[in-house]
Length: 454
Ligand code: PHE
Image (cartoon, rainbow, N blue to C red; front, side, top):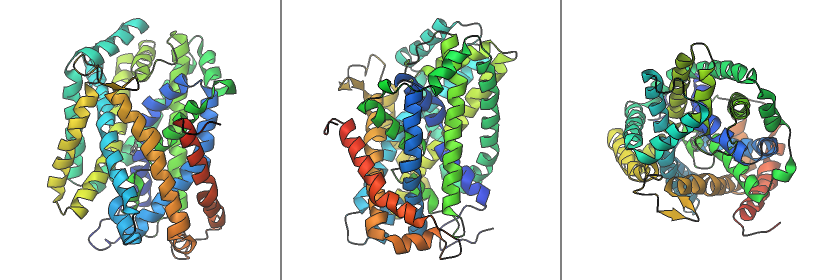
């Protein structure tokens, strides 16, 4: 057992560190968002760009967050205040807290949908439905009823319930079991999907790149997805790393988390695209893709309703291990900076996020449908602004901070655990965060939002 450092808790075991952090990374981003974005942006070519960004930008940003979080042992705002007193870097921490509000709002909307599908799987509502019927069912539920609101509040309540009673024991213990189970279920689904008639067309779509499909908005979407999926750019990992034991190997943890995250996204793609082509669903179907295709696959399996139930339960739990990590950012900020009790901080955070969340959940409802900006409804605005703008901008400042302000010496001490670990990769890491990552981020970002035309 790790000893407590000051008044702050630490995760108890090495596997606990990985399970909790991978629990934050693996979630709706992998199983819901990655497949539909890949579908909308041309398939394999999007995947290639995505993988390149994971290596060149994702891992360096993740390591930088670990360095900041574990050396400061504070929430993101407090961490920058502590490491750079009197300097405006704390604004990066504040931006992270703002991004946490936005992400939690729209993420919990989708997490709530998983509860509806659990309910439908239990009551037999998915059985015997054709592709078009499943697609109608999804749109009618999302656009025309109040049920999404009920599920939203239930999910927000579950997230808050765990945070109130302390994350470490609950999360560390549960993620160690839940992550492997989720993984096994995805493998089973992948195999079933691959053996559907016409499955190869889906595999070709996912693995044979056609680069003519890639434009600047697809590249920005891939970048946003890397940040979203790896939980980087807003201080979630600064917060989690503030609970890492001092002897943890940060590079090893970042590799384990990045590999798990990428592998789960690929598995989700393998489970979904063959089914998309086999059932003649449009790959660019959008956010409803997983809710329409997977129930379709389950119909084709013996014991399908059981697997449908299992899948949506696990999807909900994967979402829960992520929503907890986002709420923890706000709660750590409230408790440490505003000196609130953990309980008051949790309910204040959940209450305020819910206002935004309600608007996001009702974004397709006739009540709110008219409220749009650049053709995007409230849900889409929250998703786009947080993933494609705030997270990459946060990542840009995080790497600049470690590279040019915190500096090589202190970063090396943190990464090598004060010389206890060999860390021969540090010159390469410094090169990536000094030059490659910030320049790439700036170019993709300005190009993606149209301020720079390449
Ligand atoms: N990474 C999570 C997922 O893929 C979502 C998330 C984003 C969590 C940002 C924390 C911070 O589902």
